[in-house]
Length: 140
Image 1: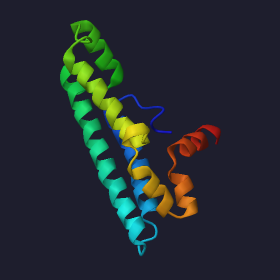
Image 2: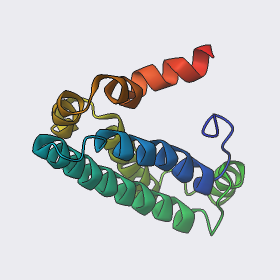
Image 3: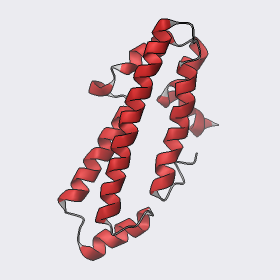
């Protein structure tokens, strides 16, 4: 819900991190299961890596836009200075795509996903699925 109304980098970063933090806790719900602990650790490490990639991308955009954090001000600044075709913006967009891709676990970055969903219990496993979470937020 917070992500839909986000208009600055801080909200765009913090909203998925709150969801991820809850997912980390749900995946490690069964502490005595060794497989669950391993899957939770993989999930935590991949989440940390994707978060760091996302922050790095935001820093590229922050630097290219002249120190703005609001999205509209960034767009206005890039258009005014004609920096929208710069390599920095291309690098930032690639890093944002990779960072969000690791969070959503499509295709090649999904090694942790089967472990986490197989070793967590049924209800937390359903709650952690991003597609179900998006549908739940949309419908209710």
